[in-house]
Image (cartoon, rainbow, N blue to C red; front, top):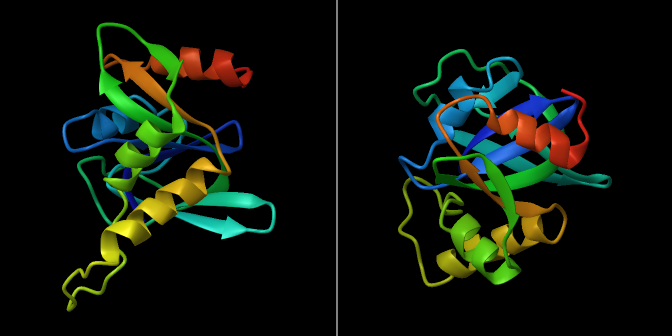
Length: 156
């Protein structure tokens, strides 16, 4: 599970990741033309064909979410900016930023141990090895979908 916003557009899953106040709910609100899985916690699961993105019952601020599942096409590490832009990010920085948003793999009645952080990093690295990770600079409007559509040739 990852602290994130998840959206299905043109049959592909896109994961928007960042700490609180980075723009996950803003991305959900500005993705209402697509299938929003959620803006709080979402699940990334492995399968033989790659990774699947699935929503969870956890509610964030965006309440118009819908259940669903799609192949994960890309992960975007969010950064608020005065423009919309997708840029490359090196794998070590991507792993660090993504791992910080992975839900610790411990039960609610457990105390995280010394193996918790390495497990979170391993989860992030497993995602980075299978799907591209980018930095997405965005403004609080739906224009970032034009940049995503152009970058991935979605025809939106």
